[in-house]
Length: 525
Image 1 (cartoon, one colour):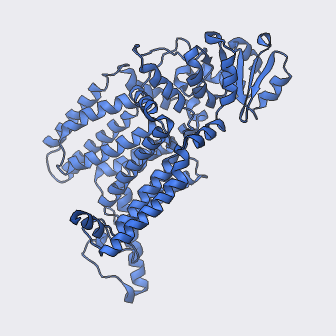
Image 2 (cartoon, one colour):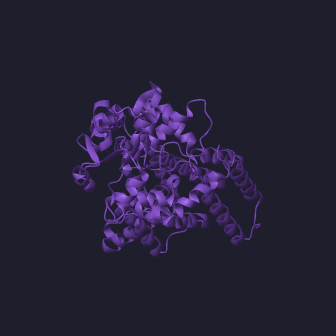
Image 3 (spheres, helix red, strand yellow):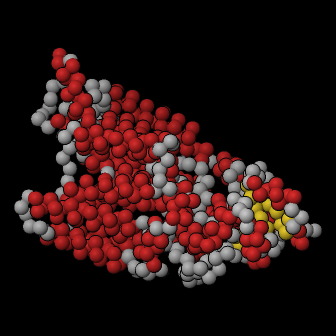
């Protein structure tokens, strides 16, 4: 009872605001399982759950047979399939929403540690999380958010002597087996080392203190250990091919630069402007490594919107310092305009200035009355439950999920294709976003797709040919004859649908609310 009373009496308005923030993040991040790549990740996990060797060439398509396949996310795929077998798609939605929320918690902590006011930290946390919302969903990429957050926290703890260097080696190895973007972690750590060396040199200390040498050795050991995976050094080389492919960069939305006409893009702009304005005040003091993190990850974020969440986390220390500098500058302007209303300073450091007169206290040991604590806790429970019920629950409720999936993917037309019973002779020319769903449904019986989200497996030629057919280029019929599919599955509004309906070489097999399936005429019954 005493412990409960202590919790209640310390549940001040600052904790209420943070609790509402994290509940809101979870509710927003619990998006329906509609990512096109989800299905081939589950198919990979299903493949690995049986006692077979790791595939090194493509198995799912009839266009990339024999092409090299580096399943760099193998451990993530296996984990996702394990969660799917335990709790289906609802459990996947909950787990990945929780991962996004954990990233939000770390972002808040990083901003607070940078000296940013609690209320401003809540606002910038929400802005940062929403700026990276294009990457939400049940997908391995979200794990990069969690690992980047953990790495930045870990390096901060190492800087203050609260963590030893050895943790980095197994951390990088685990990350490398979950996703090839662990190279971002290598970059962040290398920049940390370089920045700390510069700061040591500036202060007249040894250029490379022993503690930095230990971390450098741990980094090298982590890179070396990362090749211990089913695909060896190919896991390290894989991202280079994707990052240097103009075809992928120009045609895959998540690899494109942020769209600054959308809310996530505009929030990213706002964060960048806060940094610029904070620097303009001349009040920002940050470690060299924090500058390097922000600059390097900003380049990645501006090159590809899928990297925005990683930028927000890596740049959080600098964003927090710049945000507080702006608050202090605005406070000084207010003091100059209304000197009689100035707020007493708690100390000489401008970060201790009270910036918002209406804002809640910080997360310290601040106590409120038991009555106010109970009221705050009740507000969190009621409002939080409302947010989850309104936003998150529909995404995990099976009937809502099934309806959302049927409104996005070719569920009924795939049923019709399966009823053909073609087995391994089934070759489907499919719309790009349908590839993952189709191989999830058709591969167990031997069916093959034209393309799916694993663009790197198909290579530039197959992808170009797909684009030529999809956009009805001059040679699309020639290409279609050459690849010789016996089923075509496209969205209802696709330009080729009307063309195929008039083409005697194809017979309409089935139609549902989102798609149309055709089969070759010589298969018609």
